[in-house]
Image (tube, rainbow, N blue to C red; front, side, top):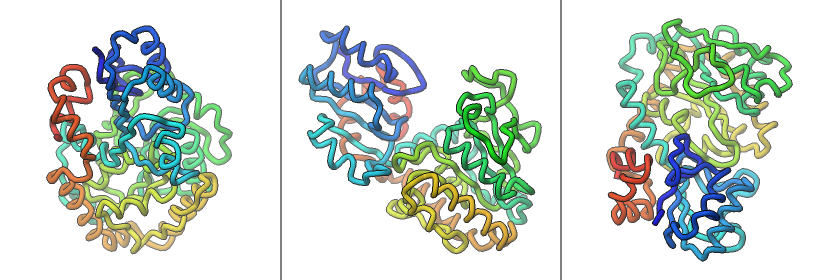
Length: 362
């Protein structure tokens, strides 16, 4: 009986790993193979979202009278209705059990990062004590809101004497965005050695793209990082947030509302000696990204890169210690996740790719 499924994963391994567009068909055609208590690992995704296919999957599970559990890698907070899941997942619209592991990507990022690069503090890097640039912003997948953010950085002349990369200008999302200030061309002002061949990207095969866990030397020669996270729907922290935390590098997030402020509930400190986080409270992303770019401009005009480094140095190192403490002491792991692992460890390891990194954590 098929009990474990990895949904919306980058790794397709039917039937245990299934993408949202074919998982419903699989359930329809293989009802006799489905365990009555299936568990769906959605740890690479933020939440249930509003996808029609996902809703159809839930309906199918309900129709088959399955006692199902979804485990997400994001927070249950939702952008436009902060109590979205309280209203909808307790049997009203979304039956079943929905578990949210807010910091799942902290653990996964630590594993991936250590495999590619030693997780040492920026304090151990020669350039960081006298940074040349205010910030760097590394951008690969050109989501619509990320296009807008980059466009506004150029509008505010923040591309001057800073480091902004743009890796996939041929991606349809970048092509369909109506650029006003940036010409949507491939940008890589890092060292030429910072290259690798594209893997799995159909849009721009002739251009190099980056591995998030392989960092350029310039990472250590800039005062802070401009981070555009993966989701505007919910507080979904990925390696984009956790790498600077692991390395003790200040950063400022453009993500869902309150994403910067919510980091405090895990023990992290804000970099509010320099940044004003009023932008983080703006609900509508179009207004929030305008305020975000304006705040970056204000900071770069008020402070030198060295000033920012000196002011935020202690806070950045404190946050690094907090991130490592969470890892070492296995904090903020939902008890439902540990209980499932304790009962089904061998099955999860055998049937899923998720089990590989869970085995290093739990």
